[in-house]
Length: 272
Image 1: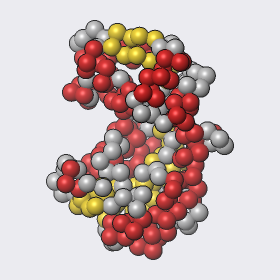
Image 2: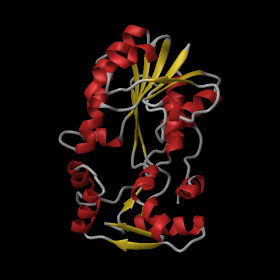
Image 3: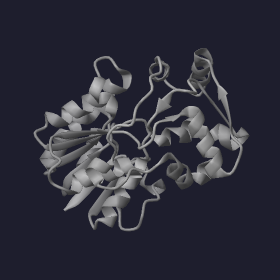
């Protein structure tokens, strides 16, 4: 049978596709633009859009398991069409924020998808990583490429970002192995790092001097809104900062040590 990967060209989805291929699975990758997907040989790439449920039936035909990128507005319809097509296991890309939804911008987004899948009657697993290391590709990489500088608020606040390959490894494990049904796996990266420490690691791995410039809350708000970030996302990111301790990592599901921030920078050297 075939495993469907939605969001297949995303930061996590690409790793899910690769992991499934390496495990010998038949993989169908769904994307809005197959002609630009640039996915590995051996992948069946199909056109589809979670925002357009009518486009999903062809992608779901003959599929028994699915990796679901979170899009709340159509999650119920996706699961209904998946069940009709014969899908019996869905692994959801969620977020640790789903643990504290109830008015939280990110938590509400992901909880809506989780609830839709749980109500479907299908076997489900929720993959709930914390902060993505890959966020820095949008937030920091442009200014590092242009000026060797990072501008951000809350430089001393500690977080535990997760490598997208670790997120994918948890998803692939849950897709392929029994014993994960009905579980929600929240996990962090293996290190608690302040933003200033992340900048130091970036400089060490890249072999360049990278400066950190602390922004005020108002300065960060102006910068992010000017870059087109939705106001509700800006407000969420500018909540009072809290240090995040290291919690369980992907290792508890995969059995492999979680990847460090230095490893992630090395993997993305060309992006900086």
